[in-house]
Length: 72
Image (cartoon, rainbow, N blue to C red):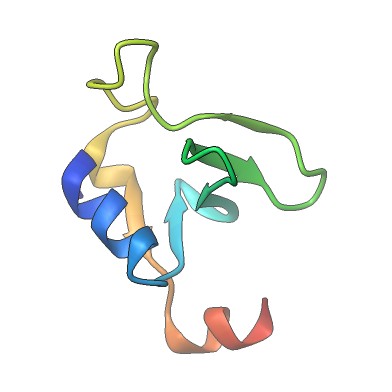
């Protein structure tokens, strides 16, 4: 997924993961896109400080299946 695709999916309410289902992309109250490790709540920015390069390979981001969305 591209940076714009990830942002659009999160903004539309879809559950986006990075690398595996334990990492979820969210948009916080300040409008920042973060990758959160759901088991501990630890988070990093989805991009570098410029906001243009993903902290992860684009092909590592994916939409959750319906079953995953319901369980969260």
